[in-house]
Image 1 (spheres, helix red, strand yellow):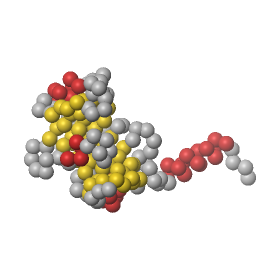
Image 2: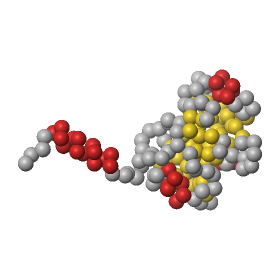
Image 3: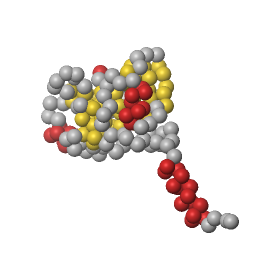
Length: 170
């Protein structure tokens, strides 16, 4: 018996949706706060992060530092592990802070939401800025919000001191 083309396409789509894939994110948080990204916190092992995010991490090691990519395609999402423990999570897609700052938010909106933020010039892009917000109580985790020369948020990270890294593990 020959299946019709629409039935074949629908069956294949259902199979793909039901099959977990290496890059597929099932529990990736959409809200990042100074307390963490969903249930993920700095200091966790790779296994704990994989289990909590429901993903398989694809790793690249640089001495004591490991970059671990998750999700599929563009925009990239990744984690930085230092000596086997989570340092930070980085998002360039659908994510927002608990104060409503998301990719595309303006620098003025960011300043209103986080008036005490530390601002530094980006090391690579002229007129771009890296904005850091520190958690008041211990542990002193941080949010990092990267702002383009056009004054729009382009990336959001959460973590420990590794949010200060300039490029990946460097």
